[in-house]
Length: 419
Image 1 (cartoon, one colour):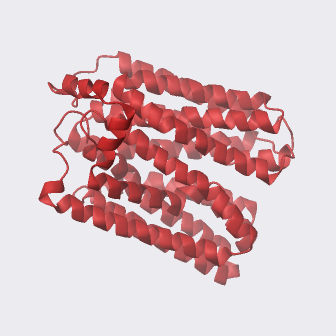
Image 2: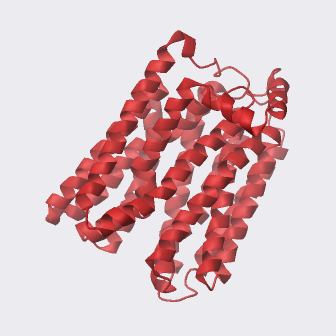
């Protein structure tokens, strides 16, 4: 039951975020008249806040109650969202987005640790998949509902979205409190060794923790895969891909919303099927598949620029193909990373990797702005094809390292709390 509450909490939080995400750029740039620079800076500051919060949230999840860390983070996210209602200047809006990013991302590693503690090893990939599906569903419902209440022609037209986002994160935190307080039975990850795991986190300082994490070759290759896959899609989801669609493909704005909706629908429709079909595949092999799928997505997008009459259809199709890769990426990356983490540093490791992903994602809008602003649509595609291929190479090297007997990960599927 507590796992269901955790999944529901993730979905409710993303429902609130979904009401804001599709409209915040246009709201800042056009509705408020602050310009594209402020709108892009808001997205980047959101990511900067996330970059700072991820390792802190992960570290606190190792040293304190993950429930407490996750709930506190959601309260911060709610405060950041609510502050946007009264943001009447670019500075206030940027600060609000920064705080919003802090809260959303600090909760992530803590929630992952909760899955690892509350769910047995063989079910963890499935639960992570359900969690991601719930987030996608919440995002889709939030974006769809916001379309009926958001008015981008009015300065006050976004307040329903901001209020909904704040309420969603508060409700999400309340659900986690219920899950954490209830006695649903023994936690699969909390066996006789759990106290020993916690003791190691008390003695390792930040520098020692960082050295412990990066001393593991498999984690270094996982870091490369994490960064390249983040750059290969997520860094461009919010701004780069829409900007390419508008400036190069010249599609209608409604096509961008349709593409985002298709992305969510494909994830919801295929997620559990993909988990069943790939249950016996190694995480590294699946990440190779993700890189290959995203390479195909960028090539399809390149074809869209060569066939103007089909550009809208191909753009929407690209988002559907990206979603297929996401159904493998989301259930695999966190369990794999956790399985390689040093004992007692699971949250810290997950926080570091989230920070890597978020930090490089923050660069995405700036890179897209420079390249597309110079009219180099072909270069934009080529760079991302190369990045996706690098992800395939990194996952291939990771698989080779994991196959080496001396470098194999700890038997965490049945160990303390980490797989």
